[in-house]
Amino acid sequence: MGLFDKLRRKKEAEAPVAAEERTEPVLGFVLLNRPQYDWKLFIATMASDWGLEITEGSEEENLVFQVDGMMVACAYMPMPIPEREVEDCCKYNLIWPEAEQVVSEQQAHVIVTVMNAADPLAAHVLFTQVTASLLKWDHAIAYYSAPLVVSASNYIRGSEALKEQDFPVQQWVFIGLYTQEQKACAYTVGLNKFGKDEIEILNSENDLSEVFGFMISIISYVIGYNVILQDGQTIGFTAEQKLPMTRSKGVSVQGDSIKIEF
Image (cartoon, rainbow, N blue to C red):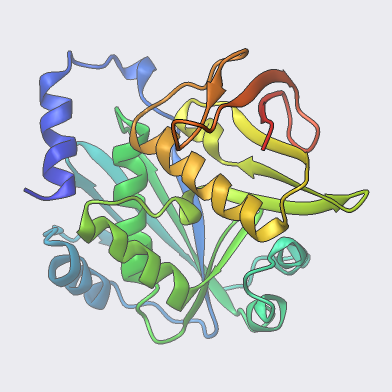
């Protein structure tokens, strides 16, 4: 049974969700280095890669369709995202050093939106399938959802996790890294889309790579098991590891965040 089948069974087992309880739309941008779109190729890729048959509902430059009650809109825009918005976000990207140079070549983009989802996890799974399929166009160069910027190849590679019954959390949640007084710090942007507090690690004695790896593990645990981290509790991945958690005003994020002493 596939991942989407599991999500479908979960929804069938739950009580119907009122319209006002539907999750917020998931939105992002596929960047293109030439002004061109190909909905027929996209539809074929959705079928071959994900087994999702789409009844085409295109209207000139837009494509709208439904999957399991969720509405998907792909809006082609024959222009780059203006005012260096994407390029400015590249400075936060430590994994893709060439990001700014590559995204500066954008000439058009597609706005991808998944709406009317009863479950944020199902919405993100479908969103990833749609986005990865669009990024297979030969002129697609990157995915953008501030502050996240991911190369087309890395996004496509990461999306393969869905076929292994896993979640590509690095495409859903941005992990920011910085140092303060020679100590490692990290924060998330995007966990709030899953109804969770953002997470921060402050003044860690571990190096940035260890902090980054730990954050990926925590995010995967929180999203994969639908966990709510609680103030005053501890967390760890071994019997001996008991890391205190505190919920307080965010340092690098808006609102309150969960601080983990790692």
